[in-house]
Image (cartoon, rainbow, N blue to C red; front, side):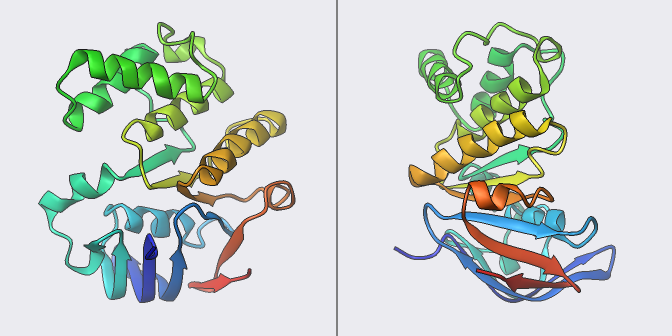
Length: 222
């Protein structure tokens, strides 16, 4: 099976400033990959390039069958349907309950049948241990529970790739460990997962390949 991500000599800019250059790495199906590095080293920029938020300015870059160097605007939603995204700050719709948050995503990505949407929502909530929380408002949930809902949201369209940007950044260590364990289990089931983190203690608990952002480059450590 071919690589899900393939970058070769890629350059990424933000506001015309070079953030990363000569980036080369690949990610295989079901692989668990850490992206580490200091604040401001380019981790978030790299993740955003993978789902079309930051353009690739030079090099060869492919995610699935999409050439990111020539990605058209109309292709971006189709790419993002195959990518689940987990944010540090959750980005839940605070005025809607859990069910409505997830239903909003399914409607936006083309699910027409209400019964099928309900079945899918029930399934992903069960997968993250939140089966009885669909009626809750986000503010009624702990940080760890909100992040579990975010993972459920990322799973809705059965993605082949999950990108998690500092998913434990706003959580206590024990809760953060639970979240990484959940993502690790997802990778073991066949979905590639890339986690940007500054919590290096996780690397020993949940082994994976390590990419380090440093000096505007990506160093493949293992």
